[in-house]
Amino acid sequence: MVVIGGGFAGASFARAVKREDPGIAVALVEPRTHYTACPLSNAVIAGMRDMSAQHFGYAGIEADGIVHVPQKAVRVEADQRRVVLADEVRLSYDRLIVAPGIDLRFDAIPGYDAAAVEQMPHAWKAGEQTLLLRRQLEAMADGGLVVISAPANPFRCPPGPYERASLIAHYLQAHKPRSKILILDAKDAFSKQRLFEAGWAALYPGMIEWVGLSFGGGVTGVDPATRTVRTEFGEHRAAVANVIPPQRAGAIADIAGVADRTGWCPIDPVSFESRLVPNVHVIGDAAIGGAMPKSAFTANAQAKACASAVVALLHGRNPGEPKLINTCYSLLAPDYGISIAGVYSPRDGLLAEVEGAGGTSPLDATGAERAEEATFGAAWFDTITTEAFG
Image (cartoon, rainbow, N blue to C red; front, side):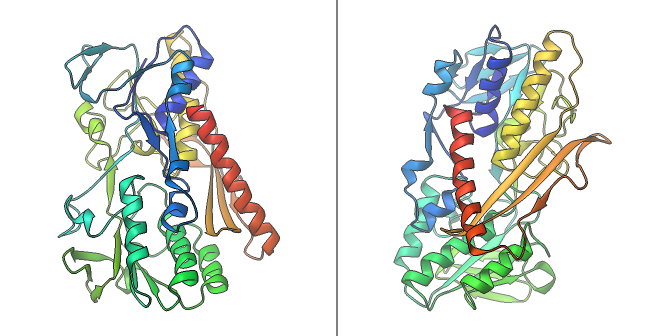
């Protein structure tokens, strides 16, 4: 096996397939020496968490007998079943797992290019951008306007922009209480919307305004020099502008030929094998997951299901039909958590939600229940990072 990408999907797959069949040789192609996790990174932006808590190395993976190849994959020679690395070394595979996460589409918003992120950070790939957004909030004068631009679906972590707004509001309430947050959204509804809006009314009355697409939330352009965000209805001059652009599968997916015209990767929902290139499987954010959202929990669940399917295929068996679970916790304050859960199974060539098997936190939950959900979210993070990275 060759696995491209050392995030939640790739790391979870490498360890899962090694557990299922220790005799399989597994190489994890990942140029970074450590992974910086996106879940809980909004707490870093709000000053509630240190960035070091988001870093995870690959020693645990190597201890499992998996070879970490600290190189970038630059080409896939699918007809030869080989991955070409940046140093021109070629790795042969029986099955290739592509788990590259996302790339940001800098062609989607006029004025927002790779240079603009220094003035208007996206912070949608955790790391230096996370810290830059935090520094901008710290430097902002009280009474400033924070503008968050949220993209249309699909994108990584659908509740993420709204959790971010909540935790920024928590920081501002304590340090810059005259400030406001404006969310400009390229859609008319978002994940856990009623729960978020109820929480904002209770915790941050009058501080957060959400504008959906139909009311002028779609961003039509930006000016990084002045931190101005434009919509069809007018302009907003921000003290801090967090622009989260549309996304697509990581670049190697396109290079490997597994991404279609949408920028994402169509897969078989049982085996996660690419519908475009045989013997190549795509998992995590890059895959077209049907009703399954793009999240760390999803990536981990798909990785384990794909590992079972690939082991079956290697041994000449038909993979069993998977049932996949996704749970997503969001923080609105340190002691205020909400969640959504879903169960998914293959139907009509996609992963479809199993009706009646999921749900969200109750709208009328008590303060103690919200605090318990926040604790559950922290415990989930510890569990999934241990499972993926050791």
